[in-house]
Image 1 (cartoon, rainbow, N blue to C red):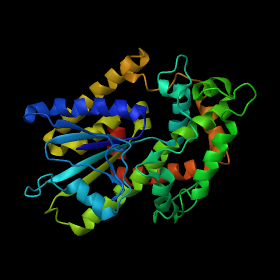
Image 2 (image 1 turned 135 degrees about the vertical axis):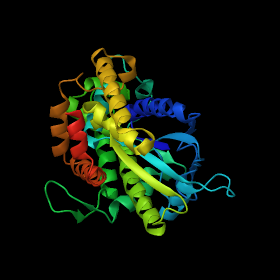
Image 3 (image 1 turned 135 degrees about the horizontal axis):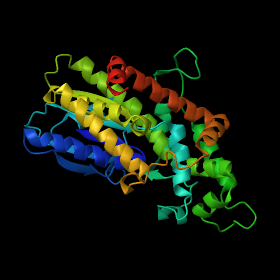
Length: 357
């Protein structure tokens, strides 16, 4: 099993889900060994993917994986045993995602708190283009997002193949950030955090979102790449003889608003018939009750979740949707995410609604 996540809420949720999976495996023997990948430290500039290896009996958590290699190479990374003499039965990928608008607003509200929960905002220039190996993320992601060869539905239109982000979108975001950072009278030497505290919320949101775009862009890249690999594996291995690959895309927004049904989906994906329906439902409801108690009590385990803590969320999301620089690419990434979540949810929704209503 391996987890991919893209923001602080995803990191925290990954830790929780790993514990839940292993606690349910105890009855079948020893739990899965937890592994960790540092995707940028382990980035391979030749293949343009993070170097990773997934052995049977392990569970790997990857925050913001760099998956820019060819579809065939990514398939080999996911399905090859570290020991080439050994077979691998298959891999399950849990991709934790979040609506790009709620991710952006949550990120802004989280980091502008007093005191800030993370000190990097006192040091970082939010407009600097981050490097992945010898590349910028724009160099790695733009070719795929310009021509994703994937149909998405935007604002009620019929699904059609269209670009998600072009190079000019990356350039426009960087230019917008530079127009705000250390340009105001009296803020020539101000930190990123100073700007988050002092700027008008709409301007602070734009600056924070420019800084967060790496994570949002990586989420879009990973959605497309994992979909392509899954289709390649299915086409080349219809009888599941040489290992299989399953992908479950889970919305963090759903985990926040519908924790019981989201946990059920996780249990069902990971365990299938190893756990009875009654067990999966009972344990999912127990998790939901525990989560809601901790959320209401502001338990430290939920410190990354900003839901219900700020009254500006809806207004800032609405602003960002209409903002000319950020609105269009975020809307297309949202449409891509919704399309994939819909594809994976067909057949599940009616049963879940009846169980957790």
